[in-house]
Amino acid sequence: TLINPFFIRADYDFEISENEQKALEIDENTNFLVLNIMIVNKPFIESTVNFAAPLIFNLDKNLIGQVILEKYSYGLTEPLKNFLKSEK
Image 1 (tube, rainbow, N blue to C red):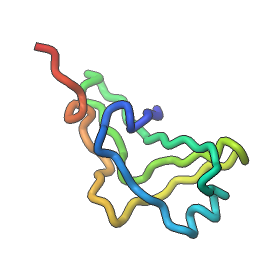
Image 2 (spheres, rainbow, N blue to C red):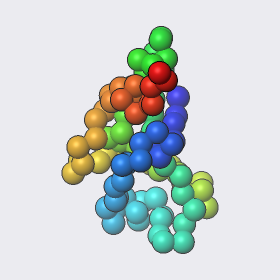
Image 3 (cartoon, rainbow, N blue to C red):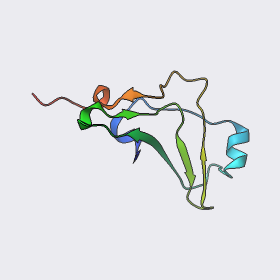
Image 4 (spheres, rainbow, N blue to C red):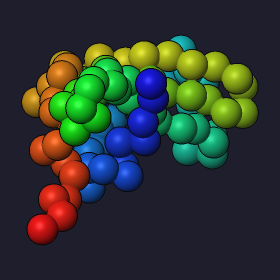
């Protein structure tokens, strides 16, 4: 399933290369969306999120691409529970 990373991780921030921007036809005026792949497990709290390779959607041109964030320390299978507030 796909998840909006900014809803669960306030520190998620990255820049994509000029080549990736050109391929996705993205500039400062483009409407775009970033989503990440989440592997849903049972129990749900054991689900994982791929923060290392987000999907970038160019909403204006109907383009999508997956970029690999090599210069960032985001993981491919980060536990969802690390980013959810626990209820006590």
